[in-house]
Amino acid sequence: MATPLQIPAEHLPRDGRFGCGPSKVRADQVAFLTANADVLGTSHRQAPVKDVVGRVREGLAQLFRLPAGYEVVLGNGGATAFWDAAAFGLIERRAENLAFGEFSSKFAKAAAAPWLEAPHVVKAEVGSRAEVEIVEGVDVYAWPHNETSTGVMAPVKRVHADAGALTVIDATSAAGGIDFDAAEADVYYFAPQKNFASDGGLWFALVSPAAIERIERIAASDRYIPEFLSLQQAVDNSRKNQTLNTPALATLLLMENQIDWINTEGGLSWADARTRESSNALYEWADAVDYARPFVSNPQHRSQVVVTIDFDDAIDAAAIASTLRANGIVDTEPYRKLGRNQLRIATFTAIDPADVRTLIGAIEYVVERLG
Image 1 (tube, rainbow, N blue to C red):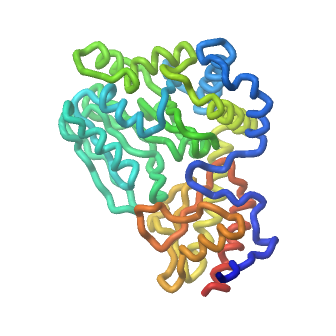
Image 2 (image 1 turned 90 degrees about the vertical axis):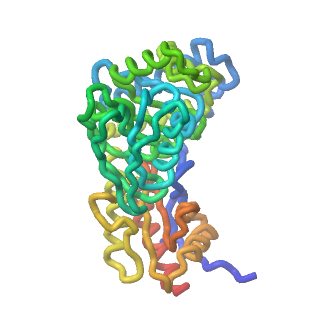
């Protein structure tokens, strides 16, 4: 068996975790978790655990500059569970889904539930993004702030369509890393294993008064809604700083420390500048070399938290990723279903821009020697 190429120490990042989820967890988060270990294994209906939930909700409200009347709601399960919950308790009749990658397409499938009218799905080729089409009868317009599978970013901008139509944004890989105006969405939902550097198992949402009213109205109707997927249950429990079922407490503690770190450093604008610095370094490098290029050709569509870089056919991106992994630089492989000769590199808030610049040197070193 051949000995893997050894990358010199000067080309090795201090932390080699560049995965798009689960993401790098900072050492301070682990220390915080250990320091609060006495809360682990205790009742989630009692004050110590409810206090943790309350601090996370308050921290998110501060981070996102929560508009008046909006609420921070959380529930069991990740964004996948939220898609089904939305089909039961948020979409009244019909959704429009912008589909330009794996995860946006999955929400579109969930919105095709048999008790709803077929969604209006606007598709775009992978590597680009779809645009909203105003359609009569649509009461939810949904798309991702950032498509994790492809590295495409879309703006968060309220859709002014039929009276009462809601704008619903999947923010799992964007939340905490990309600045935006929360008032431009009725529901901005996410799981915490990306920019919040935590584990999965929970979803969070910034929910407008109009969305709360929609949730309450559907819950009061004769529509069958499983208790686990009830958004009304999530709202009611969140107001008590709890979840329907036992929450992943370690996830909440890791998230609490990350939120405090971002807020202390300068909030969402600081996180936005940090992820832009990292992603711009990668895009500028890919534009400058003759053997690679950004997969997302339109600079206005490029993500600042998930960077996808295509390589010429003569360069084996899988061999690059394998060599990086053998040297402790992990999870740079492309999204498994995309099937492209590329690297996918997370530039989430926890990832140090200096490590991203060092990573570029490591890639260059490997390309030069593997040819």
